[in-house]
Image 1 (tube, one colour):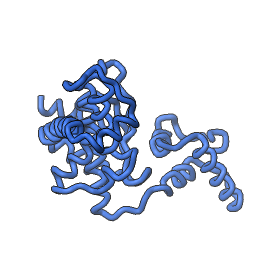
Image 2 (tube, one colour; image 1 turned 45 degrees about the vertical axis):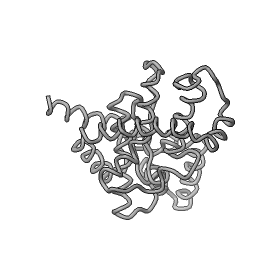
Image 3 (tube, helix red, strand yellow; image 1 turned 90 degrees about the vertical axis):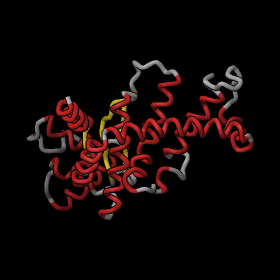
Length: 247
């Protein structure tokens, strides 16, 4: 990709391209570059970085102002709670590039994977939906509805705590495989209550953090809505600046 494009940009100025490419595979990028090259050959000119940026941005979803704001509030909630709990380091937050939005993270491997860690991880996953509830009084369906959705992931983690990870107060030594546990969840009302209680506890953590940092959350959401994509460094600069002002 670098051989075909204008080399005039500094490495730092290539960050927008790297952020826009988050979530795409190497094969996706290769295919996109081939398509851009083919188009530019027909136009009779060489490829420059702006051509790649335009091609990457072409994949953005068309969003109304209201949906853009809601998606920004949702993703800002995730990003803020991931950062405040220290569960993961945010690489980037975006809206419109991969469905409604996405927060790319790298897990913090230094934390002990105990019950507190699990609850905080669930809180970060539920924080997008919680942020919507706090600001709009309702949520979009995007938090659920699919096996990879926020609700599905958080439920699976809460179910694992009760059936596979030894964190349950009820039969903690009994291990049940994921498929069996999921089937049992649909039939065992007591198990469903325990799983839901864990989800409520995680949601409460997300709610508390978002309420305590209400202005910070809104600042991040407003910025994200305006630019469409933020790096983790930009996010942390905003959070650290807010901490300095508060201190």
